[in-house]
Length: 294
Ligand SMILES: C[S@@+](CC[C@H](N)C(=O)[O-])C[C@H]1O[C@@H](n2cnc3c(N)ncnc32)[C@H](O)[C@@H]1O
Image (cartoon, rainbow, N blue to C red):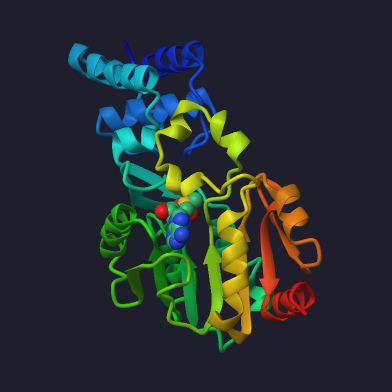
């Protein structure tokens, strides 16, 4: 069997088993290529047509055993391989933290938040940092800023530490435990936050691949807004005069708008549409809170 035939076989098995995607790939061919190449010790950008060599029996068996594990346990591939990629940056990952995929990474890399930043933007908070992927990408995009990376989960912070060390950013990223903003040390010019925002109904119907991730990372309570309500209420005293918040709300825009109907928001365009990442200025938040609690 040759490399491309093994990938095709793996793809067919994944398709037949109806596994769910969304943790780095969105289709069976990419997922099959990822697992097969990883099991063979080949780089993920290997040209599989050029490298179409004959495989040994043990290589085939090893790859198909991994595919079997993906199917029977419904474990996301990133947990099986211990690695995930976001915006071309590799991150270590295991079951202690969610798999990196935040759309905020796109906003950092494609400069869509730059109009709200200026030369004085120097202190950044990555709240709900998990694996620290956003803190790390932010540090790479803005080489001048210092970043606090906070999370309530000690297990997730262990993964965060591994990634910060891997990218040698320990001097610029401080990883710290905190329930929401409790141990934040602002004021910050930019707060990035990809919080748990999945509503209770959606939590019940999540595919097993998503249930393999820590529930604490996803569960946002009845309308998905439990964490966000407290965060936005507490945030003003942690923002500088030029401060802005970039917040991911996933598929919960309706719930977000119901909960914060008078909040002036700027929705940022991402590859998933214009309804998943919202930018809120310090001014808009102050006006909203003054209106809500006159
Ligand atoms: C959706 S994950 C985001 C992780 C990472 N920023 C990313 O984008 O891949 C949400 C994170 O929020 C953390 N979290 C949940 N409740 C929290 C709280 N009350 N205070 C701080 N972090 C919390 C979880 O442990 C989890 O790591």
